[in-house]
Amino acid sequence: KTLDLVTFANQIVDRFEMSTKHASIQFKRKFPNKPVKVQADHDKLTQVFDNTISNAIKYSPEGGAVVCTIKQEAHRVVVSVRDEGVGIPKENIPYIFDRFYRVDKARARSLGGTGLGLAIAKEIVFAHGGSIWVSSDWGKGTTMFFSLPYDDGTVEEA
Ligand code: ATP
Ligand code: MG
Image (cartoon, rainbow, N blue to C red; front, side, top):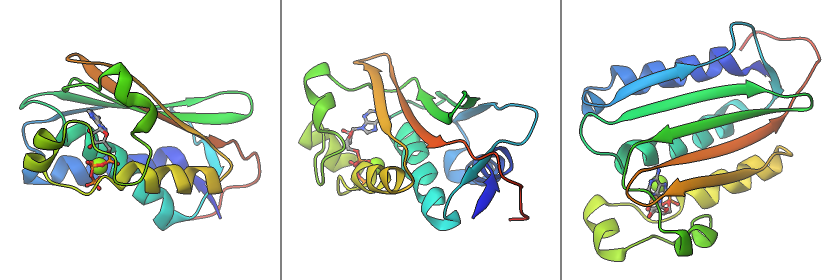
């Protein structure tokens, strides 16, 4: 189904922003001011956004900023979710998309989770013909990126 990624992402960030659980997080959006069309399953794409944004929140300090960006390129759309959190040590980066993999078991246990969020996100993004990757500096923050093929068909209502 064709959907407008800007409207879609705005709805998701609105939902996180309205949740009192995340009151201390500063959400920012850098979205194009025109629709960006992609072919995607609504519920599955919701899961990709939820898993990446919830990680950004979970691994951030109080008052941290979470910046969601949508960039349209020639043949694909790139979404990024940047945080100012704990970051990921370089040696762990190759494994974070593996099922049940969690960096620093002790810290991870106290924060809760199963280590499946990114494995699921990767599976969904791949099934949509996109890819997912990360850039992170330990102690400084993380940016999670995912891409989707750009669709220049017509937009249908969500
Ligand atoms: P779940 O998503 O199943 O609740 P989880 O968050 O631990 O558990 P993933 O989302 O798959 O699992 O992430 C795997 C690991 O990658 C995390 O345990 C964490 O160590 C690391 N990680 C993921 N996103 C971030 C981030 N934004 N900042 C720092 N570390 C991260
Ligand atoms: Mg997670």
